[in-house]
Amino acid sequence: MGYTHSITVALDHGQALERVRAALSDQGFGILSESDIAATFAAKLGPEAAQELGDYVILGACNPALASRALAAEPALGALLPCNVVVRRGAGEERTTIDVIDPQTMVRLTDDPEVRVVADDADTRLRAALAQFGDGPED
Image (cartoon, rainbow, N blue to C red; front, top):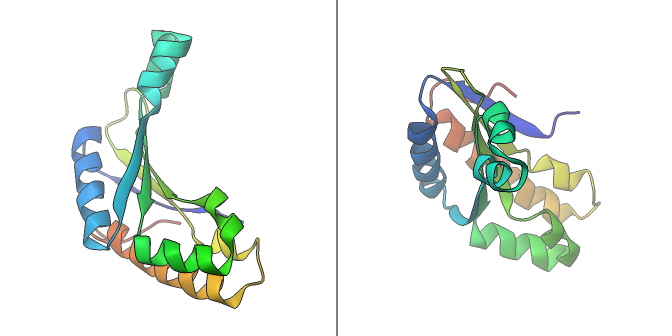
């Protein structure tokens, strides 16, 4: 059972990060949070930990209209929001991988039909964002 859609692109980490932000915006998502995990590891665990990880940023993406509908149907789903998007490139790697949460993960946790409708919409939008990089997600 997968829980992400992924694509690997021939871009450096910084370029991929900027293009992901733009692609998400094109699909109605804003960025609520940004966590530079490599920087956190460097500060808390030492530079070796960050170096082993490579470049790794988690974006907390939110489409307010979809989030509003999901929370109205199932308020506890806030524990699964925002939709996380990971932009990562291991040390020494030339390509960058983009992972987005599969919104169908939420559907597997609830029986609410409105959540399924929202998840289907979010899934379509997130896949469209990844498709802007080429052939679409590798799942």
